[in-house]
Image 1 (tube, helix red, strand yellow):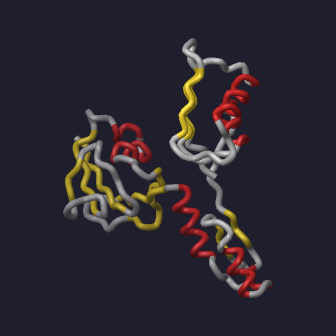
Image 2 (cartoon, rainbow, N blue to C red; image 1 turned 90 degrees about the vertical axis):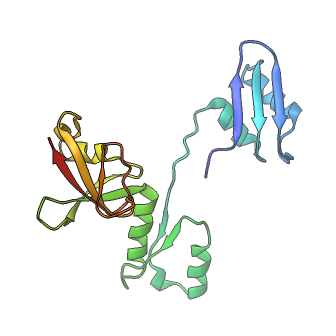
Length: 196
């Protein structure tokens, strides 16, 4: 579940300013004022941009709710009917059906975990040798050449030591492309670093 689209900002003075950009079925202005008075908030700006429940609004006011992404993995798909498997698979978009006994859906599970964690594999290459596809650097999506160099050794990311890097893969316009420390890497790029 994602956080509710509510802007809530307490102020020092000025009273309560309530704005709703959509029609609300669970809340109204009087109820919002009552909830805020319960929490001793008498001056605040509140902008509600989606239809939310009272509990979701209270979570925003308290500010202590954590929203964590999850992936529901349902095993033993071989022991129920096809109709039941289909119903379970359609529960949420974050559901994966597997059967360890029949080895069904395990590759899909690995791909879904990889995508949910938003990771990026960067392979390294030495001069005159083929890339090492067996042991990639695993980094967050949106990582830069500097992050990959720091993952190898912190001295590689030092601008006084780093000369340039050659990159092969989806993040380049042509293969290989000569880049600096600020180049953003994509999944399964190959990187070769040149030092001064």
